[in-house]
Image 1 (tube, helix red, strand yellow):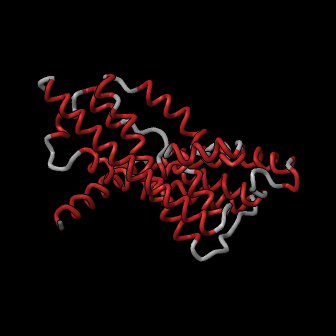
Image 2 (tube, rainbow, N blue to C red):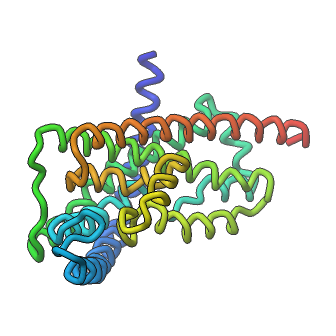
Image 3 (cartoon, rainbow, N blue to C red):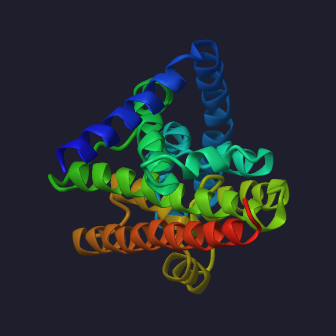
Length: 270
């Protein structure tokens, strides 16, 4: 048990160090996030100004500004886009070396992804939030349980997003090249996760369907709604609970798909 924990921790540290290598990319990415944060914030504030009572979808101007700037910070912590390591190793055949290692690929990549999220929290989450707080009035949580719920929600979003991305990458086992599924994921996940606008601006039946039937709103919309206290405490906790269910399902499904893919590789003589 101790050796397993030590191995998992070492893999997390390797993920942290890998992303810490690209300092210039980190600075450029943070600057881009901040620029897009201003664009998104002014658009949503215009929507709120045109809505009755200055409230759009149940969010006032301060909540919308918080939604935007914390969302810009969380985008890279959650890692919604840009991960195709598994698909590339499948395409090139390097995945065969991964299968010989004592740690299963799903566990090894999860540990590295948690390390990546830790680095992104320090470098990509903080700058947009600071700039947003300096330029716009933001919401400060008023309930004691909001901060721990938000932290738990962000962790679950990282794990759930990892499960989704692993499944999209794993299509390369059958397709040989996962660029099509990865492009589809990039186009659809930003909209369905609530990155471009809060899902509460959509009709209620559609929002509830997306939340219950798919894991994607849990990747950004849930932690942001928890932080801005869009709902009461009971619904806040319920959304995080639903997020936990989807995170477990997606990682378990990734394990099932990986095992089926390995059987396919053995049948083909790899």
